[in-house]
Image (cartoon, rainbow, N blue to C red; front, side, top):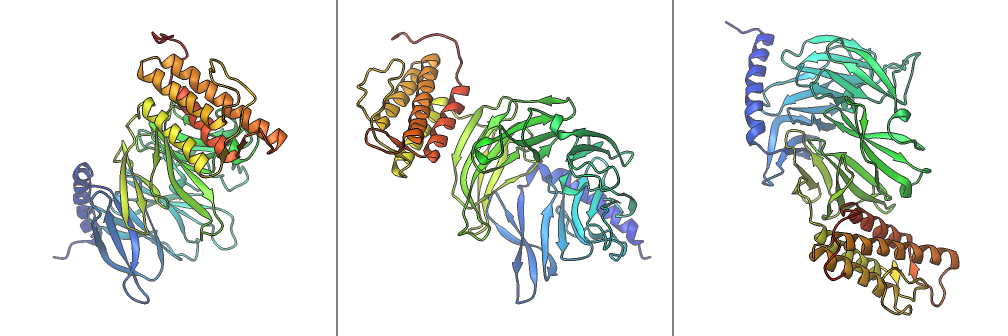
Length: 463
């Protein structure tokens, strides 16, 4: 007897979900990519990010396609240039099908797929069909691949799943007469309808513009600019949609990309530079900051090899991978570690040396004597900054965090005075030279440290 195709798929799907629940506890996350096997065809490979082992994933070959996967690495999505997308169960590659099955003449091509594990459903968003301006999202069962209906909204990978999986939040506009592109929409996965819309401008601080950068577990990471546009005015904050709560904003005055950790407890920000000599015009520096998402305090500052990309997996909370596709190497980073403040002061000292070595900070006399300063006003700015940092570290080692805070605050004042004096008076004899790169590097990293130290408390015994 020949088994019905849908029944066979259902049996495979059930087996697959059993495998997934087990493998997610033991396996490591993978990075999937296309690799040429001859002049015309590409094959899918996967790289174990923990071991560096590379292996073929399926026997399927493609002429041209893009790959993506859901944050839990349950399904791999393959997007051809036109037509349906292929979905493959990562735990059991034999479970695969194309979505959707309807004629591509009535719609465009697949833009994105969103998997809701609690409902065991795919939300497949298509580009508007030729001659139309309406997005269409098809809903499919992940067990049988049957169609469960459709809605005229754009959900896809832009969606953020609620903690219980009953809602999707997304900030794409509803393409109809009531278009609201600057709103955060709430889509019910139970009724398959939009049940609420919130104006993004009403969330968090007043700002020039707000953009949703990332989202997990009912939280969104939002970028905004204040008081005006420009990288120097970049801020980020976490917004808990379900409790309507905004957490402490983070000022990050550099060109950057930001992500939420797998458990939404940390904000991961990579500093990116604009470089027109590169094909993408973006230089991924490997300079990564990890902040507490609720308090805004700096937990870690990492200097990783440049040119990599940050990969975050929801089913591996507390860890992310920094992967370089040119070398096929990855670095596992524990984002739960909180670097001691003494080590962060050492990092700030190193950044000061870096500013001097790069020519961003040139020595010269200072015209302002700071609080508690015991050296001559003729001492160079570099030496004065060194003394501030040495005293801050010495006080912290003695357990006097208040004294350390005061020294760091004086360090910031010295940096601000030097930079603004140089801007106003120009480079001349007796006026130190400090570029905007040195100013941002020293000022804001020192302020991140200050946020980690108490404002009041015991003074050191030597005071």
